[in-house]
Image (cartoon, rainbow, N blue to C red; front, side, top):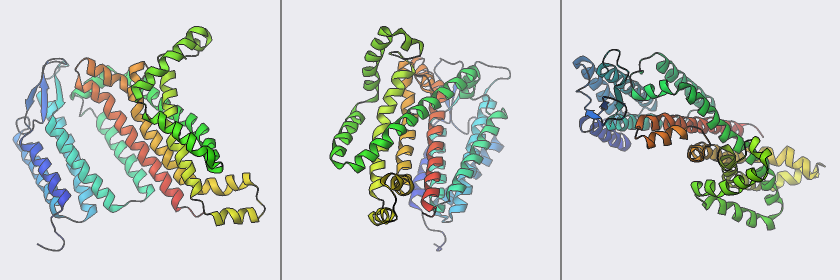
Length: 385
């Protein structure tokens, strides 16, 4: 075996997953309507012969690349090509299985599709990790990928997939819940940063209060999210009853108010802890030199300590934002809104495509937020101090 082609352990594992997905698992699920049980169909039972052979050729190239090609760029290109091929194939299967003019039939991706897409996604992610792109390149890649996905969905190629049928029915509601999801996540984060940053500075400056504050915030983190939502419903409901003006302002036992308060409480610990860690990492010699130049404590904090600690603080904010985007989904149980409304409605109706309509945007939003904040943190770390 040549030096440029060595068996890649991760590639071998992903190839096995791909073979299982293609050969053993159903690729699509055919339903005569939204609520009836589905019939599973294999990949090659739903594709024309020419398309099946072309897809086979793509998968063979992807497998060969995953198994032994060491070039990260080639692995990335081939992985993305595989993802595109899987997307085109599932669209072709949905278009081929849907009778002309029929709006009742539902065609859903099956287990084989998801396993194959996961394997290709891991191959692509591994290639990106090996390339170690800079922050600008990562953001540009995310923007380009989002643009391609948006264009593909707007083209109508995927309209016969059941998740797109669910989106078509809930389009106006989807936009409203998306705004609510973002507002809840960002609003609670903003409030937490306003409170947690001074608290973190206090913990850094006054060590004797640090342990008590961090223990209290750790205790909040141990409360399950659903339990915390339930605990907050009682006092907020009582306040809304006692003071009708609060109810007019939207504060009550259900809805956005308990969701925002719970998310705010969960957000405090990561920001406070990272503020303490970030300030503690500022070199003492730098602080002493600033004092020696005549700067006051407040000036040292604003001009020296906080700028140097900012990358660590932003890491805590990144953790909070991704955490909040996920927790907002659960807030739908108490009327908080957001993508979780589709998730729980779909669970109640045993409509998996409605569940995916809420789950996939939530994952995409969390992933995009993480990429953007990671890029910002990298830029700040590389900036001259």
